[in-house]
Length: 349
Ligand code: 1HN
Image (tube, rainbow, N blue to C red):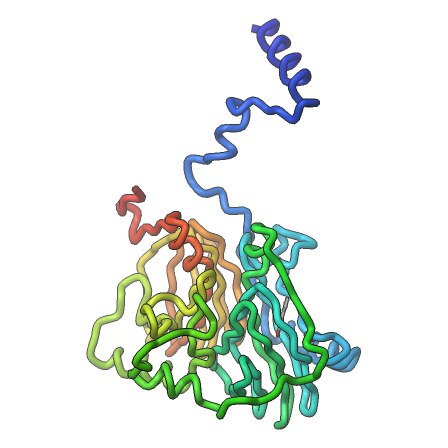
């Protein structure tokens, strides 16, 4: 046996300079019997992050920073600017009168607005006013710049697919060279054309695989959730959930990142489920109690949490609660690898 092992090791040592490795030593790591998600469950508390972000507001201007953001870097992935295995997330600040200059990149972004009184983003020549709870997308390749003509700090969460784009090594980026792009369309154009429950006769997204609607209103989404809760039962696992949808195909609004809003009425206690997607949660209203594989987390307003894939997850809420969820499910589904279990007896295959 020892001699066998010695002969094998000798063999491995001899093939190594030729950049060869025996699969039989690697197989289990390459195709584990179930996901071994490295992401740490981690919470970033708004009352801790916001003061630091405001301090950064004193250190440098939005224009100097290009984007004044504190990255949510998962402790499992130091130096990699990732909130989980596949996604980037961070918290951005712009102050009244500032602009974050126009640029574009292959990575796509979505932004969930936490505080805004007069902040706006321009995408594809059209300005979207940002209000608390709104979701704004900047599709991969689209010029975008941010500004703030109102009062107080404007703060939001950015989620980008940059780590995924970088796995494929397909990143491009470019600066426009101006603080702001030219406005060429009326505010509300995209929503009028694609988001009124009607569609153009020959529908076509200027953003390719990303939704032609780039700003989704919280006021409308919240009203929709509360209304449907009046006359339909909550899903026992997920509560009331509505996903942001691309009106052209009914799919997710971005090819890589999924996003949805969840409404948990006061007293909701969910059943466990788990899925392979790597997820983030932002509390938009109320308070979430989350059980993850037996560990309990309490999340308050604007707190952000990284939820590793393939973790048993149970949500409950003692007051009316609304959550913004984002994940890499959209990408996983396209690759045919997304799996979910609703309850422990649910089959995986
Ligand atoms: C970016 O363009 C924004 O436009 C925010 O607000 C965060 C992180 C990495 C790369 C580009 C933005 C970003 C980003």
